[in-house]
Image (cartoon, rainbow, N blue to C red; front, side, top):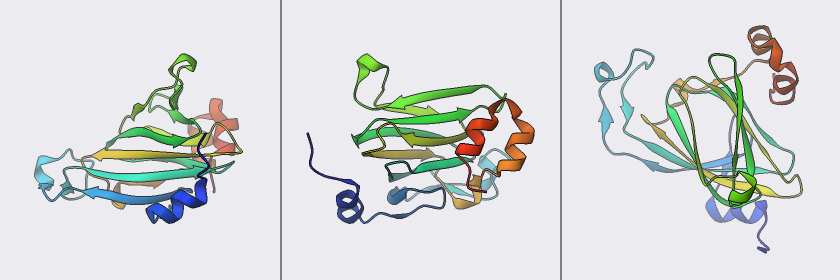
Length: 169
């Protein structure tokens, strides 16, 4: 059992607060970019081929519902398992448990599709989850939309309880 805690990783990795909650640090930004005219119309300009971050949630904190314009691949590193909560564009809800206990349905990697609303929670509120996220085309804050509680409830009333729990505004 590791004696490292969330504060250890925040300091060791130089993590900073993320707008969706939790802590992060960009670890990779590709040198090359995709030209704007070669990207789908949903993008407002050129994008790096790929980006990657460390992302940490501690205790009862959560990653607020948000969406981005690219697929996002999540990778489990250490700590408690984590649940990624997804409201697909169709309105269907799904969840993925990211962790190391395959016998309990956890996986090391999972993909959230572009345009789906998603957020995450730590499965052990006495612990933390340290994961990595890789985005391609690369992440740009122009492609990030934080969910607004009222708007999401109007669009997905069947998920009101989840939306109330996982939005900030």
